[in-house]
Length: 305
Image 1 (tube, helix red, strand yellow):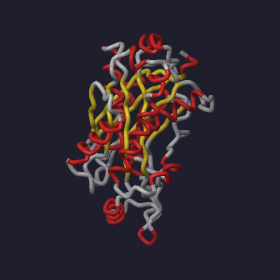
Image 2: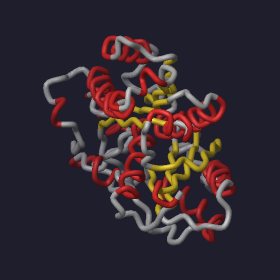
Image 3: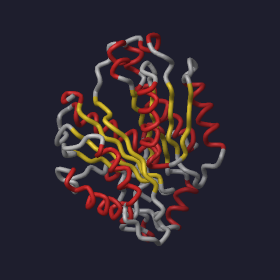
Image 4: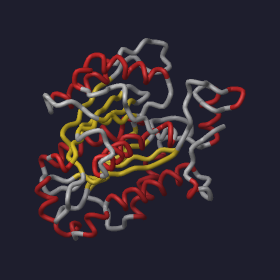
């Protein structure tokens, strides 16, 4: 089986601990601007929203408790609140919508959105092979499957007022977020026409009328269902994109990273804008969960705001 593993976790066989170690590292990095500017003193204690895998082999109800214990040990000063969302791929962007609402109503409240996932448990891999979801599985290879990966990502969200108060220069601006719900689910045998994703796109595009999206980042992983869903969605909204077919699907580089997809895509879009190798100033990030959750976010380069 071909997998995209984090080499620095090679000595950690426990899947949940691999997820937790990656998660803590990403959160610590996202919090660095607060430490460097003494923002941990000048602002309210940060809130933490974490996206985790939906229920699947071997992750049962104990997953949240184990991750929470690991976070409490790694960050003894704690967070004002920790919330775990078990909705898979779109979870981080769902958390971003919650974070945006919190920041708008509580101007001095930092929020960290994060996500962590790992497909590399032996039982998970066997299940993926048995259900013909694996790309690169020898004789049982599915040319339209995906390569399992593992990752974590995190991003710090602040209001403009809070950032100015502690001297943090924004790297990107979150314009809007949008949610949708799809009832024609993957592997159900029903044809998905992208109605749930279209609702998520509609919400973010309406928030910034007139200007075309220049960059698209998504969690497509090679499965035809996701490609079809996106195709139907952009057919409805194509006038709002400079080149909707010219999207970035990083799963072809780092594998399918599940619940880490949203935060990582947000960071990827931000870095591309910051280092000026994006195609323009307006990036759209979207995610699609197996359970039907759909989410999108619109990011604008800080240099253009």
